[in-house]
Structure formats: structure tokens, C-alpha cells
Image (tube, rainbow, N blue to C red):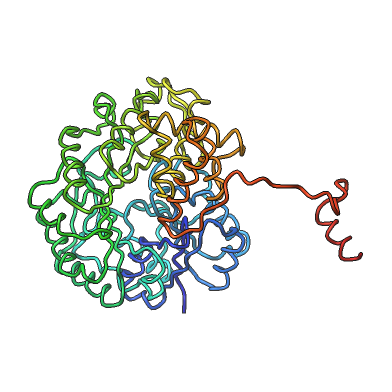
Length: 505
């Protein structure tokens, strides 16, 4: 019997709903009456509602995040129409703050703010017993992590083989970065280490080989960080891949020695730089020792096999595009493999909005709440930078054109050259997303000839080397396409109708 259905829409199928698994693991006596149903944002809300109604639950717990907020609104609206007796409970970051600014929440029965691991099961018990609380908005609080049942047994064998396995060793963050929801929870709480490592061991026995830690500051507690690294290092021969989010200026010798022992392809560090402008960093409470950060990046590049994924943000108050570009160029010079270029968002509840008036910051009114303009970057320039971010990701971060992109940069600025490339992509295609690998290769090849003066033969060699590196068949470049005039269709007849006419003929 499924009296309680936990559901959400993931950004991609490969993602798993970590929060739903925590709720399900801690349902206590209601566990046997609880099920999880995961969907993706590509699915139509009416199809999601159809699946929910087919399960005939009494309570629907809906996880609301920035990427699925609009779809969740539609789902709640449809559920109210086709299954009015179902009790709808929502939770998640998107509905944990600024409730009064979200009129659609009037459609739901209850809102659980913050962590719902304990409060949600209590609420469900009361609803099923006919003792509904009168208060609609409930504070989830911060449960004692030692009292929670870990959710890792709820990952299916299919999850372990085909999807991202999220894990966490702690919750909270001691830093106050004003663009981040974690700045609202400055108390770091840790899960009991022995129980946690035992759960990880069981996952590996079942075949898990990739672990993505969602901790905001994995290397905050150095003793725990070292213990976790030692645990995985003793099992690294299994072929593991581990992702950690690291504080960039905190890497003492004890951790350095452990990290250096991991083989290539086993460690990825997400290093949140965000900005190298110290005035901007101070303004948004993002303080870091920049000199030490570069010392640590140099060590990781020269003495370890770690894959470095770093983060910078466009649109921070008081940082013009040129300063952002200088920071990006410094990271590339430091030898990091990826620079994730994020666009500033005004997440609900975060204090970044306190700078809105002083820096003329304008944000989208709907998710993802991305910045539209500010005092230093007007709207057209911000749109151009957003296109740059997408081109940077598809041409550089994915690693498809490592040699060719470096040739495009030459001795110049990676930021400036890639910004110019983004302008070309947009002028040719009218967009910068959804462009095939072969078409990206063709555009890049043209730029290497026109902008850098390479011969076509030299460019073909570069592009072919990049494709060969990934075991791909190199595309033909500068191919002359002859258009046939035989059987030229009647342009006055729409394509679908032409096909039916051909069938009749």
C-alpha cells in the first residue's frame, strides 16, 4: 500500500533525489506505506500527475528546487483539479524562504521549511491519524544527525550502475557567502563517522564506484577529511571516482600527503573561487587567502593527479566583466582543467539582494532568478556574457577541443578569445546551445584560420588530434556541399503534406 508518495523532478535522469531517500529512510513505522517516484523536468506535468494519481496516494510529498519550481507549481495545480482529496506537502530549498511571495503555495496543504527528515514523518502520521495540524507552514529544524537513519540502502542496483550516487559527511557551512543558501546555516553538523564509512563500504560491496559528496566544505574538519580519504585510499584499486567540494585555501600537509597517493582519474575537487577581486569578495562575505589558494592549486597540479573543477561567478556586485576575465585567465594559467562559469542568482532567502539598490542589480523574477544587469554590466553585455558561459562550457570544459582551444588562445587572453568565439557562434547559429560536436568543430576550425592565421592543413591536424584523443571519428572540415536540383519540392506545400503527396505518388 502506498499511502505516502515522495516525488520530485530531477534536472536529468542521471541525477538521483537524495533528499527523498533521506525522507523515506526516516519514515519509521510508515516506511512500508511509503514509496518514491522520480521524474525529470523534461516530462510534462500532466504526465507526472497521471503517474501520481495511478499510485493512489493519500499524501504526496513534493520536493521543490530552483530547477523544477515552475513544474511543481503546475503539478500542484493539476493535482488539485483531478485529485482534490490528496494531501499535498511541499518542501525543499525553493519553498523554505519567502513563502509570502509564492502565491501558488496556497494550493498545497502544508509547507515544511528546511530539513524535513524528522518533521515530515511526524506530519504524515498526524494526517493519516486524522489529527491534521492547523498550522500550514512547519519548521523542519535541524535534526541531530546521529539520530537519522542513513539512506544509502535505498539506492537501487540500477542507481549504482547508471546514476549519480550522492553522499554527505556533514551539513551546513561556517562561511557567509551571500549568494549561497548555505550561508543561512552557519553551524556545521557531522554524521557519525563509523556508521557513515560502514554505509559506504556496503555501497561498494553492491558495486558503487562513484561517490559525489555534497558537503559544502569537505576539508573543514581535517581529522574527518583525512579519515574519509584514508578509507577510500585503501579501496582505490576497485576503480573509484570521488568528488569533493573543497575550501581553496585550506590544504595542510596531512591532506596533501594523502591526496598525492590517489591515482589519476580517482579524485575530482570542486574548488569554489567565485572571485579573485578582494573588494568584491569582502562585499559578499567571500573571504579567502588568494596567495594560499594559488599555492594549493600549484601543489595539486604539480604533485597530484586530481582533476580540478573550479568555480567563478559572473555578475557579482562591483565586479566588471574585465575583472572577471582576469580571474578566469589566472585559473587557466594555474593549470586547472575546468572553470565552471556561473551566473549570479538571487536564491530565495539569500542576503545578496541587500546590494541591489547600491549596485543597480536586476534579477529575473522567475527561476532561475539569474541576474539581468547591474551597475557595471548592462543587459546586452550580460546576455553576451551568458552566451560566453555556455560556449566556454561546451568548447573548453567538456575537453573536446583541448589542443584547438589553446591554439585559439595563443599568447592572448582565454577569456577574450572565447568571448569573441561566442560572438561568432551566436552570429552564425542564432544561439549557442544545442550545437552538434561536428558543427562546433567547423566553427572553431574557421576561427583558427581567420583569427589566428593557421593553414587549413594545420587546423585539420589539431581538430583531428582532439577527436582522436577521445576515440572519435574526425569530421570533414570545409566540405563543399553540392545541392541537387532534382526533385526540388514545391516550397508552397508544407513539409508534412509533401511527404503524404509523395506516398500517394
